[in-house]
Length: 397
Image (cartoon, rainbow, N blue to C red; front, side, top):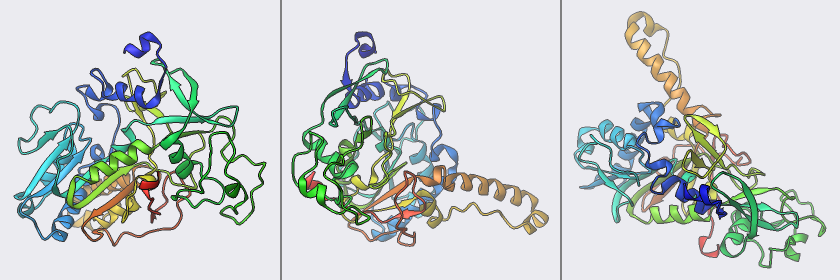
């Protein structure tokens, strides 16, 4: 691409935007995401079946409206929306309207009932589902320089990096609130006011007790040491809020690998994927560029986050083996059930796909997955079972 040829230095957000979504970007390729990595959608039709059951719950909570929308964000080649519509019972299917939101062109042979859009439709009622969308919303990367100041990381088209200007303004406030909060600040809340670019926290933040009750010395750095990195997630917060605003009533769900305040990865998660394997992130259009999502920062009032494992189990997906007695009475059914259990186990594996976070954002509805459990431990980059999110005040960011 042009940036590789000219050696232009740019922030990761701008470089990634062109590399993924530009005229010759990675996501414009004809093979689509399925040609390079395996998502839950591609792992098994059980996933689309579970999402169809979730849509049916939303339908019931809405009072079975005349038109029921299913909006598939970052639809790839339409695999999920196609599978969901096919799995719906006849009564629901007759009222369902499928929308695939994707920048790439409409694939040949897609069901003509599915609308292919570059932006989500406005004013719909139903379920908006974003499977591995937010991790591909481009973000800038910050790194703490030798002077203790968080600086924007600049990148060339060949992947070489250098540090640029100090992070300021709304991006600095986001880092201070969500990634490197001052000592004593409650995760997910705007910390005490004060200047923060010069490597010193406000005095009241320095002297406040930390989460364990110990007092922090004014000599201790308020941000991690030189070389610590963070992805500035504000564009994702705004993108999610915009998507949710398109629903009149219903449920919005974002599914992604996530991390949470108190357990952010010290060097970030920016990486690349090519042909099913992790690779160096090079913003030249040759590979996918992705980073895990601060789902707690994205959450709007009333939101909850659970693991995919918990959500899918609540929707009837279980990796339990079928009873051995079935092998004697109906061997073919046993083999089918065994295959289904294997696929379900992959979708719900705690260290794999089951570790994804599901951000559940009701809009004018009760929690239709209220039978999924919440767990208090959010200290891991991969959730253990489920988490009740401390909702942010986005107006203060």
